[in-house]
Length: 305
Image (cartoon, rainbow, N blue to C red):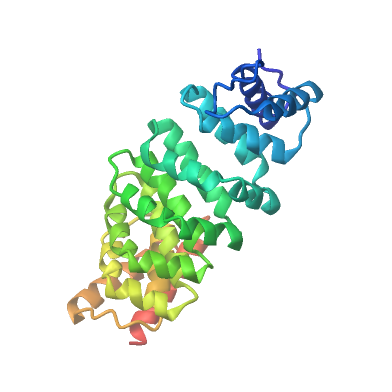
């Protein structure tokens, strides 16, 4: 039985080390590699015995498992969890890249079992989070084309996790956004705004809002791709807080700022009418202040053009 007093990360690390030791022939013929590596076995055995929490050892051990043909799905998931235990620290994320972890992760976000693939995608997102060194490495290793292709996957959990990874690679990182734009990533996002999966929709709309809120050139890219009308189609009359509507209004408020939306007079009036009704019904509703504020911003932006 799992000890509730031991952190999950520590358990994953212990299991990773145990696996690495157990799958290594002590005669000097490793099962995980083609070439003998007695030093690795000795190192991992010592680490297991001491129950060390050294990050580099944990990352190396996890990669040994992930690169093994003998690893089960459970082994792979535990190894990815062990990696995520450490990569919150920027230096550890950089170490993972230097240890060759990007090649391993790239393989897993393409071809693995769905559950493992989702775990690998979440790991990519966490590796890239606010880490320029890792972002550059992942861009150079062509992660974005794979992640963008994943947006059309039938498994919506894979789509959601791919959006998470894309967000980590392109938000507040111009080279990442430039590459995403080059490979027509904006167009690939649009079907996600039509998804019936609310998590996929919300993550997509939030990403669009975040990207376009502070950069007019990025905003113009999304306006040109006709993202604004797709978002408008998701506006619904409500009389209570709704996270999907809040995210939609956030994205529309960002996109409508100083933008030539090329709306017909009739369409503009319809949108304004819907927004005014929304404001009237929700301006005193509990927890709806932010939504009402976004709606007012959109009205002001549309009236200013």
